[in-house]
Image 1 (cartoon, helix red, strand yellow):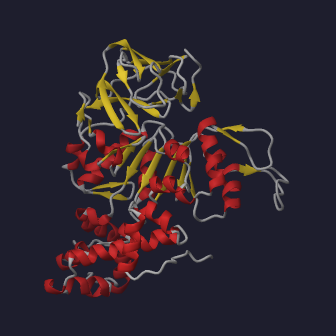
Image 2: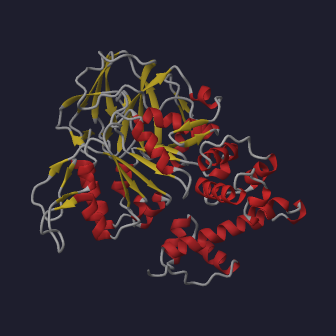
Image 3: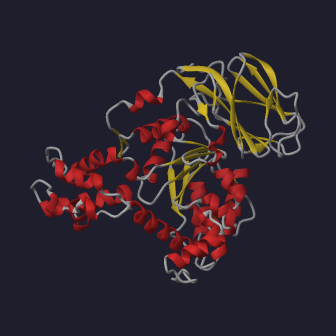
Length: 488
């Protein structure tokens, strides 16, 4: 465990963890004990210098160095020059093959930060642009500096802590009810991250509330007055996705009777939300990567590119790391999108939110009707359910109950039979843990085989198990060799 005087504690082995990621670094939301990004950014259009901006409760800055194997945090002096690289004599050492022995030089002068490329092989990138050899650029707290395939972020402590936020009552954050400590920590982190232009990747099961978190991220950013543009990558054909994203010129294809700007241009100055980015076709992955790197868009059928200023936020329920290993998702795009990854835990892991969420949905379904709290028996049944559909399923259950109850109180009779039967089942009849785990494993195997079109080798990679183990499980669960996805 590495702890800095900025209040941020990081486990070097969390590069293989679960929940919040900067580059390849993952941090559990419930384990965050400080800020990942300070609030003092230096966006390109900000004409003030770091010295002129207010402190905003920020403490001593530290530098967070991230590579594919983990991360380290180092306190920064008030003034001084520090070398960054793989060499033994460097002040800030980054053990990664893409980092040169002396890769860059960081100059600290009070609140003013300057990064200079020291003639590195793989370059220094700031705000999407690679610096020229020996070029120096001023940057701000919270801005991401890329050193080859490693990253550097200067972070600052805030005097308020996430632990204080976790002790508060349930919050309504733009329609998202936040009560569980892990969700409080996650949304507190979103508040900090929103102040930066770093790209974000939101992970979570279907129905956990990824879109609400994206809205909170946009609402708290300097881009809040500009549009938040959404695109569901799974809902459109590859041809439509390209024309929707990039736009097209008149006559670019049959039916293109006039020129049309795409979503990337529509989101200029704001945020582009790529929902279900794991379903993005391979050809478009390369084009999106080019836009992220060059900040330019080429419409379909056009000869001239157009400048765009867009923050990318992507979301998916897929395991993108496994998709990268399978070769179905580009590794370079993955690392461009996951400047920071915000993973939302499923509802079954935050039971404390079931009641406030249910009461929130009840109040929305009965606007203007003042009612008391839910019956304790109803709450007990709701909290006992594992909610495979997460918050969306709970919202549907409450909506159904309101219709059946009319103006009366909601009782057990208005809940789905599945929930009532499970709650009334005697303990002796409850399924054993081994049986439940086996059912989950079987569903995961079936899903993996469907996604890989029945290829057992690829399915084993997706599941993270040896192929021989997968074959044994297929025999154990009576699954045939072919679990091919049906063509639409």
